[in-house]
Length: 192
Image (tube, rainbow, N blue to C red; front, side, top):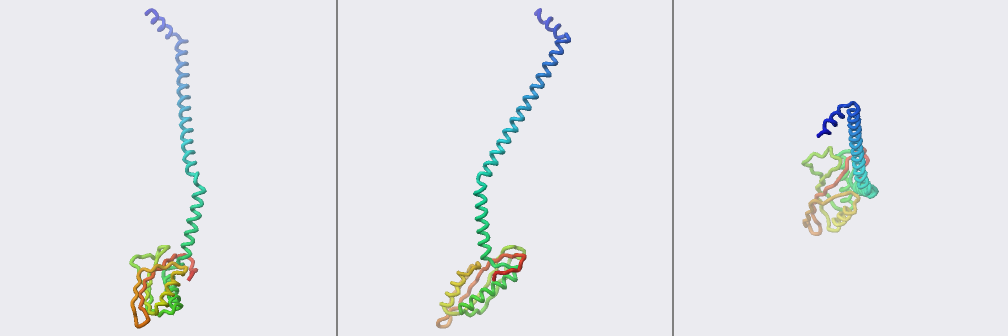
């Protein structure tokens, strides 16, 4: 216990206070340096994590580019089978003319050929469809020739409804509902 008054006396001296202050400053600087070092290490770890994510994302970049090229080629191939025009009315007219030409080439007599009005308004859409109702009469061979030409046609038509009834001795009455697909462009260049 005799030492305690000596330690207190020593602490009261000026040199001891300066030594304590210097040691506290050194300890504080050390603490700040270690905090900065830990922040630096955390920054490195976060950059490593980002680099890992980047490597994962870019590992298959060439495969993705090839897939994009394939999809673009498929889109262009699909677009080549659509009627193209500046507006729906122009395209509908081109579809009717095409169907009329095919019926004439097959030797069929069209009794009626008209587009139906759509319930939804697709005037502002880039892609659309037009339904054309056709009533024709002719022989079975002529109808088969028409169907074969429709199948070979470069444009995309879908048969929604087909009704065939006998008419006269060798003739048939055919009720056909065709759905044609189109793409609206700002140009009026039409493939039909």
